[in-house]
Amino acid sequence: MKAIKEKQFCGSVAIVDDEPDALYTYSVILKSNGIKDITCIQDAREVPVILKERSFSVILLDLSMPYISGFELLKYIVVEYPEIPVIVITAINEINSAVECIKAGAFDYLVKPVEKNRLITSIHKALEINRLKEEITGLKESLLLDDIEHKDAFSEIVTVNQKMKGIFKYVEVIARTDQPVLITGETGTGKELIARAVHRVSGKKGEFVAVNIAGLDDTMFSDTLFGHRKGAFTGAMSNREGLIARARGGTLFLDEIGDMSEASQIKLLRVIQENVYYPLGSDMAKNSDARIIVATNQDINEMVSSGKFRKDLFYRLKAHHVHLPPLRERKDDIPVLVDHFVKEASISLGKKLLKYPEELIVLLMNHLFPGNVRELKMMIYDAVTRCKSSILSLESFKDMIDVSNSIDKELKSEIVRFYIQMRFPDKLPTLKEMEQILIDEALRRAQGNQGLASSMLGITRQALNRRIRKTNAP
Image (cartoon, rainbow, N blue to C red):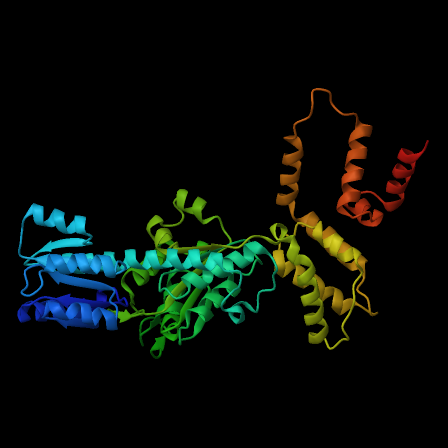
């Protein structure tokens, strides 16, 4: 039962000791704690030969051995295979010996008889530090490359934006680890698409299982994720597996984690820490090897600060963090997204490929898109549905943008606060001068289109035209 609760992890360990009893004892301890890939080496002279043929995640090394001393072997491994952490295990309980080994490059120094938990903890730390080094190296190498290695994994995400390309590269580095991933970003930025991309790049054979946990109380959360046993509650007529069982060997994606109750947060923390869970009505732990990916559109840092979200769970989930920029920060994607959605909508609705006026891109580039890519897609589909000709109507988009702006009070208040905080020169500009500044800026943003500029200024096209004529009059 104890072995079930130990954290599972992947890694190969070599044990180098001339005493058969020691090799057997350490092997049993490691196997009982989930480490299955173990190589026992009794003759120290075999180590250089074996290391040429294969590598190890960790090496446990005795100091007192015939033929080659453990200290000499330690120095050889550190020079020739610096990526492999070496844990020295010895009966020599001397400070000088420990200092010399650490100075020579040993990861840890343990004195026989080694306490089981101390040994396992040291191995875990060595594996974790090695994993972080590999990820940092991989991330550096990935960022130096221009191309995305797994382009197919990101095929659902339409972008030419460099921020997004950088996120793709980061995803490629972290995807093959088993650590949790936290994805943050506003509604409609594509958090689930990124989660699916992580799953595809990971190479995991199991399913990608997604669940939105918003609105689930603790009982529903437990039943949905962990399942239940017959008789666990009224109406539980038979056993039922939860989604975490369905995601075995794959990925479990939990959306809207900011809405989790305190009790549910504790249960999720246990799954991540110990890789075990309990179905409702059962006191028997079940193992889980599903990769956990979570997402939220809320300010998770603020929730942690205010005590609404557990700090320990937050740091566990933030092993890898992907933050998706809103569409207003990647406006270079708007033209390619418009092309993509117009084609997609035309095909979906059985229409010939529609065209759109050039002014449409200018109009959309000046919209704040509180609903992000999802809002843009909705706009395009609605316009294509209503279109009776071969060209999309600009007016239908203007109507939708006016409605969305009237709803988006938060973004409007941000604009007001910005202008309130503007710094003026000592001599205030006149109202006439400010009017001309606003007109010039609106025309610049609208690329000279007076219809769009007048919409931005909240006046009619005729009123704008009168002001322009008045300004240009001799």
